[in-house]
Image 1 (tube, helix red, strand yellow):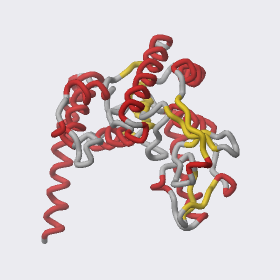
Image 2: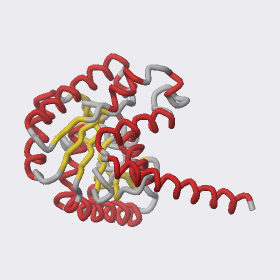
Image 3: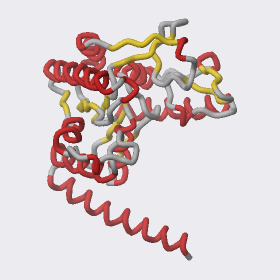
Image 4: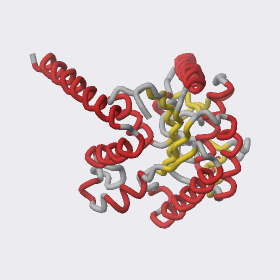
Length: 270
């Protein structure tokens, strides 16, 4: 991966963490839809981008005074239906164009559990505080995840797919449920990568669990990784995928960013 690469990120909030790092260090990177946790929803969003399928009024739901889409994170929800549709469809159009020329697609799975609308059978990416009775909850299987991604990966043999499992424990599943869920994701990704030469796995989950085995590497909620942990995982990612010249350029961008932040700090304090 070099600074000529074009990197599309989809998945959990950890995907956003790494995407932000990539942008900070000068890469052309994009993370649409916001946080998405389960493999079925990640794949659905990939297909939305591939087909450039826009959101319509019929796709929106109204929760707590906001217009929402079950395919988007709540950060895209607004009081105005028009504003919500414009924002989401602009994101889809940009993502569609980005996907066409992306060299790398990095997918971060957070949980193997899905929530499906009882009324439509649709798997949702975010529930948006809709009554829990409206959904059924189940855990995807290894074979189900593998089969779901087989066609999409083979459709883009020229792109490099990097799979990761989010190091964030999905406490909604319970501690044991979270472990079982991560195990399903790990086994599914192993199978996907074994079947496709353009797929690889980056062990962000293992780095957090086995290398950074201390609560000082967690944020105040004791669930999300701290900034120090994110920096450490990013360094491991760079060691894995960046040639030496890319690492040198990253250091140059870091100097520029620090100078920019210093100037902004002085403007605020002046």
